[in-house]
Image (cartoon, rainbow, N blue to C red; front, side, top):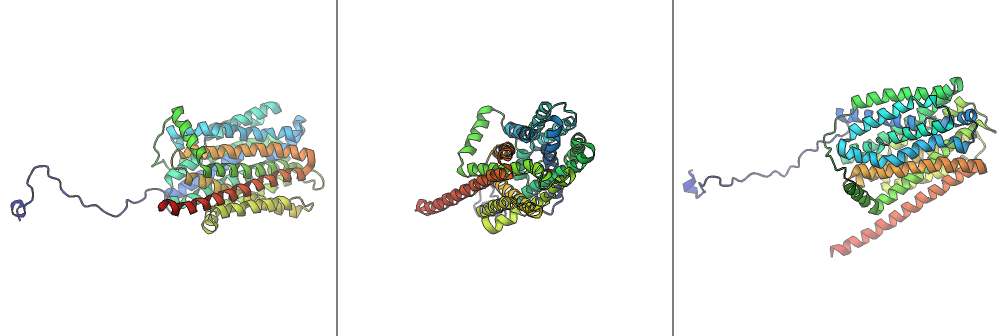
Length: 430
């Protein structure tokens, strides 16, 4: 039928109806089962291994460092606190660079510098030089944690995010475990300098594999480096009550973990246990428990909710602290298992919640979390060592229990705030 017979317009340029499909566009982000997801998971797992292995490479060696340089535990602990403190100070600026230049670029550069410094650490001539090198190494590593979480939030489908971040955190636990176990046994035979050199070589291999495996980002959009824009983003995140609570929870969990694992080497090599350096270092095999608990964090949240999972993680950590006061080695080890499981689960839940909560400036949101997290590590290692020097293991445990009480209190306040908000929503609807 002709246009004239139907009354249709024959004017040139007349609008032609375009059919609209109700089918949503397919989500191109990575999901479990895909080859890109598997490569990404392995790459970030290895980055997590390198990060924690380098960051805590001196922690299991503190008794040997104390002996060589003639310093107390509280002074030797600065080789750990300087690294975590450097990371805490630089994580926000490094996250800003990742917003401008890309997550993969910044992570690669950070890991490259960190492993280069790691190869210099064995040649430190004094405790002061060692602390400075460790601070530089921590600052270099600052580009990894926040950028990794931002990368995952952008490139992974939301339903798989907690699991993906859990795998990254699991890499942290493997790196922390292997670094401490390897350094313990190597140091027993060849000294602490050779042992940190070995960790540096392992980190080099992880860095190369990471760069070869990590898929190029497909959903990254460059942001601004203007200070005004960045400060506005940070201000927005700090104004969010939920993000503030998550930042505090991360710091408190890490206060416990930093304190316990900075001091445990001294406790186990001294009376009544008197373990050798190698055996004491092998205690860090309990990190494998953290690998599992971080990996199942997504399922915990699915069953218990975020706050329920945090209650469980905090309660497990506190129970481990109390149990570690025992004078029987098997009970001490069981306490460490519970502390480690609770910490890694709590960290995975809190850090993934930050990535989900932030609607913009995800790298800055994650950076603020990481900054508070590693401030907690620095505080925990120094305060825990000071408490150990003043009051033995009981002092370190007391610091940890106070931190866990803080986690529970903050989570309770969050639960009440959520209930109040839920009651207000129906009122607002009317």
